Image (cartoon, rainbow, N blue to C red; front, side):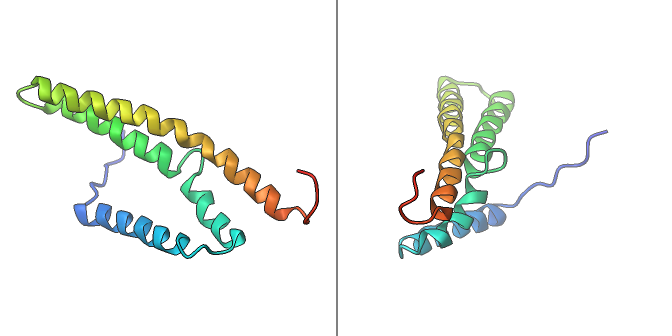
Length: 115
C-alpha cells in the first residue's frame, strides 16, 4: 500500500523559491569559498539536489497535464513537450555535484599543493 501523498501549497513553493532567492542574495556578497561549499553541497546533491528534483517536478507535471488536459490541443501538446525537454536538460546539470566535490578537495588542500 502506498503512503498518502502530502500536497504542497502554493505558499510552500513560494517559500522554497524565496529561500533560493535569499541564497542568491547572499552569494552575491561573495562570501568565502569555505562558506559557499556547505550551501552548494545539498543544493547540488546527486540524488536530492535541485537539478534532480526540478527535473522530476517538470516531468511529473508534464505527465499530469498530458493525462488530464481536456481538450488535448496542440497548445497543450507543445507545453507538455517543452516541460519534458526542460526536464531532460536540467537533469544533465546533476553532474555539478562532481564539481562541488572537486571544490571541497581544492579548499581542503594546502596552498600550492597539486590537485
